Image 1 (spheres, rainbow, N blue to C red):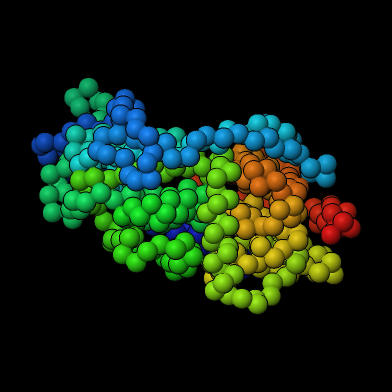
Image 2: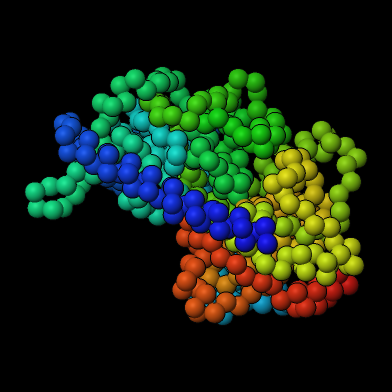
Length: 424
């Protein structure tokens, strides 16, 4: 009941408040653009080529780039107890080769950095190609209030950037490795995209820059051995950077296809967590539950928990745990039953050969967690829950704020877990 009320309130707020506010703000920017002068056209910079230099345990010089970690590949496998999707996404869960991207550093000059989506934009309106998550969408530009649409006499519109509106923006002259791609970080993206950059920055002594950190981020960074003063926090507002160093990892490529090199960073983190919290006991069998307020709602979650309780499982809600508690919970688990979501990134702390049973509603089309488990060589069992064509059409699974509800086949889940725990 509470989850239905929460989803209804969220939907009402989105339709009645947020969407009208965003539309009104867009109209105001358009009206300002129609009156203003000096705007420059905005476009993604796909063309600029930076000089390639070897990585020498330091940041690359201006207008150059270096490869810190070479690309890698590994092969996934499909566990015999898995239940694959009946949609086209099934191809992502069959055995296949995964290409994990390299980690590059790119030294730009004279750029504006914007907090909401981490866009890096030059005064001439060029959006750096690695400063946004995933494929570029024109709607990303709506996150920058200094960008507005101007409609021409022929009815066409063009996005214009007004850098003169940022004359009073804070300015940072020294080199800074950017270690944030949003002021509202997603837990999974942060662990897979940003944490390896912070680990690198701490290792080579590179000065780093981030938006104001949240408590769980501070808890994580405290386990990365970052020297005092090396990581600077700034308020989430536009800032002008004379020497920003960005990375291809800001684009989320490492979230989709995790790199084996991640193991070094997370092994170091876990070792420090264990030093800071010795003797903490955690359950060996864990159910990872999502928040009731989340858009993907498992309607029979309580039934699932009760069905697995006799088998020794303990339910946890990761967002209610400290970072150390999350790391130790996954590190100590022999078997994890988890709903698909960002908390799956914590399998980075699982012991080799640990069993992970992942529950996914069909239509997600986002195999990052399966690739991650494959890279870590975990016993990954995926249980797709069938969805009707009507359900998939009415609630697209991987659109922002797309709310939907589904149920898990508890009988099949218990049967699967019983078969897996015989060997544990």
